[in-house]
Length: 120
Length: 213
Image 1 (tube, rainbow over the protein chains, first blue to last red):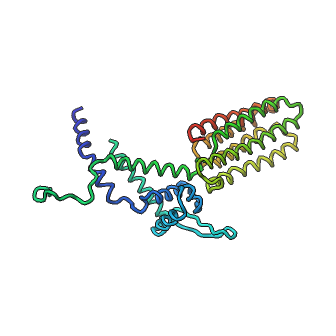
Image 2: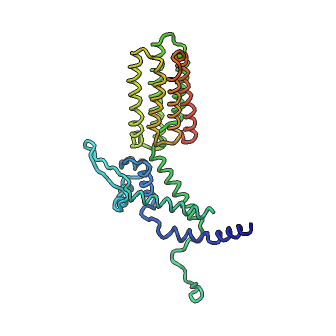
């Protein structure tokens, strides 16, 4: 009983430390902004390509906003962009790359770690 | 450590010594990710209240069909119900998509349709064959099983209750087919009523309650 309390207290004492040390420095800033996080999440869930318009209505954003952030992710090779024509209408489709999925999973782990550290 | 000789030195960016905002932020992020993923998956595609409405019309149809005098009238009753159910289903899907701010014809919706429709086409072809062969009593079981197949494949990426509903249809269809032939005639409408009526109402209600509409 006493030993248990001691361990608990010891854990309690170190608790805030790992949160700061483990989470803040290597947080993936590239996917941290809302829209980019949204693009990655949507593509991760859809597991099939989503068109520019699908993403736009899904994330309730504007053409300009979406294209700027999508380009950032594209440059980081987190998403891949395919352009084609449907008749005469250009069509842009996005998929998540393996690197993007890895970054997304890492980000999720990150958030989870923060919650875990705070919870106990 | 540094505060003894340099009393007023402060880090420019404050270290977060209070974990609560960080924690709340992480929570908020996860919630946002989850919401986005749900919307992106076929989660919103399956309409709960639409399912309930389809179930109610099927229950009414089973009562009407049970009182029909000829097999042609019986067949016509269920065909009408089928068309009605398709119309209700499509309307409900459109309404739910609009409510979620999603395009009706998004990639997940396309995926759903392409996996849901083929078993129904097979069902239509088999119905024709069975009808011509005078084996109309086998039709309800075939309908239930193929509908169940469509629900399982179409709902594979949806919320878990959808494929579970499909499995229930499969089981019921198998029971209907396994029943001794002598039973089949009076039981036809019971099977169909329980499946397209009962299962739709029950699962439609669960989906509507848990997944918004």
